[in-house]
Image (cartoon, rainbow, N blue to C red):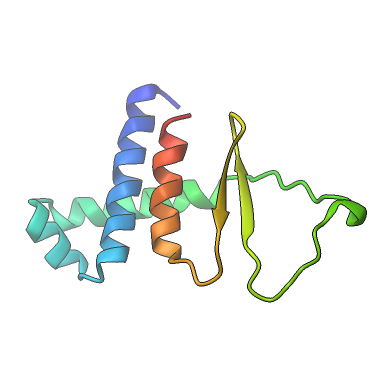
Length: 107
């Protein structure tokens, strides 16, 4: 994917996440930001398709290495370049999606 296309996808991924988190309708969200709703829907579909096409490698630690699971324990999400996020119970999924979009755009 070309750099310009990657940046455009990251921009729209962020906007789609913001709209979801805002709780506004697409029409209201677009009106507030001066966006065309038809263009928003088109990019929302592209973002959804791009997300569906992704493959995420998951490494499962050996049983001996795992910390004992307890109710309410956090989850660590390891990212490229030795970065990680710790997600506490009760996290806001929309906020996490927006954060991951920003971090993915930096790669």
